[in-house]
Image (cartoon, rainbow, N blue to C red; front, top):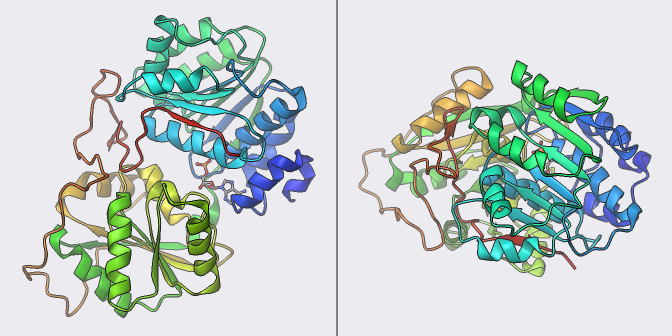
Length: 425
Ligand code: AMP
């Protein structure tokens, strides 16, 4: 089975190959054909299964086939529980739809609303967190009268976070004639109820997290924060690796760490969100061809990295959410190969460590590196980076003090944008 089977517009296929997707995932195989036929869908699927592309590709196809104006008003509304997920979905649309000219916007709280309002006025596809969207609707700053496609993503999580009333208010103001898709990792009674209310004769699809994760081994390396850089170097020296992908929390850290490694003789490069397409390309090609064996990246930049040579993913900084962890480690262990995910963990990361262990169903091995001086004074890592809005505390989300599944919400390190509108080419 390959993507050609879906007979998608060639502009969309360019996005698919740029994203590095070679074969569709199980959820894509199940969901794309009925969605292309205009059916409603109930997807039992978690993040990591490729569910975003499962709905994004048919949505792009539908918009192109309808030949709708590429300017607003909004035709597609995707509701997502967290700012992080909203940005991820938005970026997926931007990446896959790069050649389609569709305008996309992301709407979430915690930042000035004006840039978002501006981008909304031109967007065809909007990915939004319910709280901020409702605020904008109440201020009559968004026109949803033409929405004919609604996606409720991570619906169970939205309900957990108390968004049910907001969702109802939003949906009650959308046109009744529409295609609706609901994705949820679990199917509690409340979700079934929503399903009966919002979906018409839905096709049910179900997917487990792709089994490539099974070929990845995980290990945590506890270390005081100020010794991380030293430990990383020791790990590089002592680990037999092909290509390593190292994750940092912020763009600045990615660049400075790569430079530091380069200075010490490693074939290192970096990838971060605001690099020019040329520099990004140079880094990616360098990684694929073996010119570089270490790539330091931020979460946002890593999306779409598909390089079979990656034998190790190292979390220099732990991600904020288990979803980011899943995405990061998904960059290794590809194509039947085994991969290793090594994480440098400080005491600050305790909460994340527990959440990741819960998600992966068991204790993850702790390792110490023989011969490494864990008591050394070391150089102090900056607590706050120039480009990072890094606070460990879960910020309240749209006024709710929300944490979900033990993870802090409403954070977006080194990737926050006041209102993310994008249109590629
Ligand atoms: P999602 O479940 O949508 O969050 O996707 C999880 C990860 O899988 C994302 O990094 C996607 O870019 C990636 N992905 C989605 N579809 C495919 C595919 N067909 N082949 C390879 N990677 C994919």
